Amino acid sequence: MKIAGIIILALFFCLAPAGVLWMCRKIKFFGKIGPILILYFIGAIIANLGIFPAGEPKNWLQEMFAGAGSVQELLSNAMIPLAIPLMLFSFTFRKSETRDTLIAMITGLAAVVIAVVAGYPLFSSHINDAPKVAGMYTACLTGGTVNMASVSQMLGVEGQQYALLNTYDMMVSFTYLVFIMAIGIRLARKILPVKTLDYNEAAIQAELEKSGANPYKGIFAWSGLKDVLFLLGVTIIIIGISAGVAIGLSKLLPGTFMMFFILTITTLGIAASFIKPVHDKKFGYETGMYFIYIFSIVVASMANVRALDFTGALWTIGFLAFVEVVSLTLQVLSARLFKVDADTAVIASVTYINSPPFVPMIAASMKNSRVLMPGLSIGIIGYAAGNYLGVIIAQLFG
Image 1 (cartoon, rainbow, N blue to C red):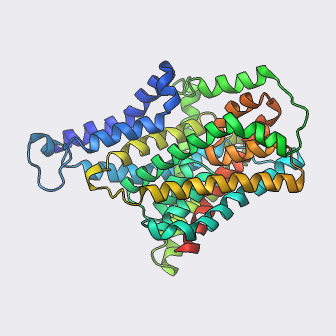
Image 2 (cartoon, helix red, strand yellow):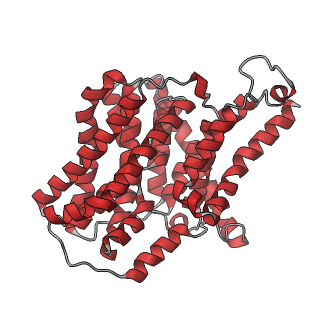
């Protein structure tokens, strides 16, 4: 019974994201919510059905899923190290095309870090594990979900706490996005210089369609499968090297294995993106994101709502809102100081706060296709820098 339960649970966790992705493509309402939030919701329901035993199994169902904890622990620990290199392989790290993009890139990263440092003394006394929370949100608001998940593993954050913190981020970041589209773009154009708009509707529509299309189409064709297997092989080599480096360094600095492990994986993933046979392979980013989807439903399935402490929720949400508002303000002030145009400044802020997949949507809202490539380029740097900045902030306040 126990072995059958382990197999069923492992298959469910691995296949559920495919079903959710299909549902998001077919039903617009779910597509707007997004797969990660839906997977959190499904995982949270499972966690609170009472089918996972807290101690001794009380019925046949709990007996069947008595091995749930080992499955959850294995998958949650394995998915992030697998995802990081795969998501970095296909990125192109190049010198910025324009002065404005380079300035917006640097000031955007600085704005998030300064906002976190400024907000920490105001909110930290009311937030559990405040240094870890600050580090995770720094990683998330400069990179994305993968960075937040990576830093949570480095800092030893429990799965249910990570799921809760990520849910807060989705709530606040969605509100921020609505503000940008409703007011922020027009406001920035009144404060900052405005360049001639280059509205290539076809280019924007192509990016929007690309983001809404099935990114996994062709992955099971022989050419796609070969690429994925090759990239997984490179990833496993990177994980092996990173584990060796982390073991060696953790002997010098006890208790630091996971931190050095993830940071080495990130560094080697970036280095591998410069190797043409690795960089040119397809489906690396998409495979990495699928591992993030599995991670999302697994950690949510570990969150027993009845055991959660919600007392710090409002303070945590307030801290996150403070960081987003202050970072946007600093981004605009920096842009005014360095004479960066309004649309580049706003797209940089959106890229960091909401992540690169939102760039085409905001470019369409701006009616300015010129900011597409700068926005995506800035996002690449954010993904690469997020893990390092998150750890630095956590260590600074820890």
